[in-house]
Each structure stands twice: as structure tokens, then as C-alpha cells.
Length: 112
Image (cartoon, rainbow, N blue to C red; front, side, top):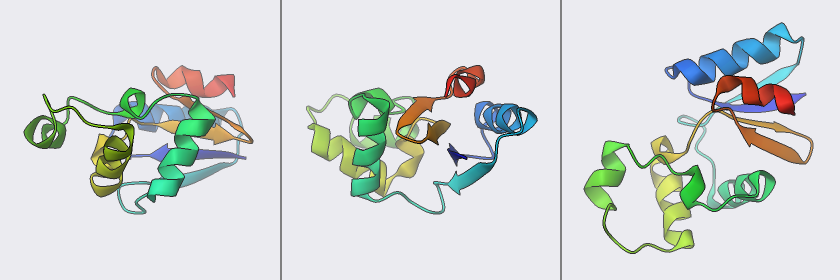
């Protein structure tokens, strides 16, 4: 089974979900904008992805530009910002076992 942190309004996220389903994969969809990940869950995602919080951050979002851009901000503060504003989390994220990958491009989810 693959867990997919999914935003149905995002075309890349929809494509990743479709690719997994076409492959016959059972997918547990996490609608992370509604079921907001805790700080601990975000830290776990970062660990599985083996990246920094900044690498998981969507810097093009207006909330980032308005509240955080140009400020020196710590890893912990970025994680807290992603928890408070889950729109800042890059998507889609696919997790299988102890491995995770950001589905950009969507075909990357098939690497799991």
C-alpha cells in the first residue's frame, strides 16, 4: 500500500494518484489540507524524504511571500509554518514502507 499526501485541486497530485491506481497500487489518500499533519508528522515526512524543511516548502505560495519571505527562519519555524499553513507543503508526497518521494513530476511516485 502507498500513502499519498494529496491535494485534489492540484493537477500533479491528481496525475500521481491516477498513475498509482493504474499500476494497481492500493492508495491511502491523505487530504493534508483537511487532515493537517502535526509537527511530528511533518518531521517524519522529512526524515522519510531525507530532505530539509526548506526543500519541502512551496515558496511560491502567497502566505509564504506575505509572512516569511526575506526573513531568516529556522528549520523548526519552517516546520511550524507548514503545520499552521499546510498549503506550504509540496505535493504530492508518496510513502511506501520506509521510503517517500515527492511526485514532481508525477511519474516519480512509480519509483517507490
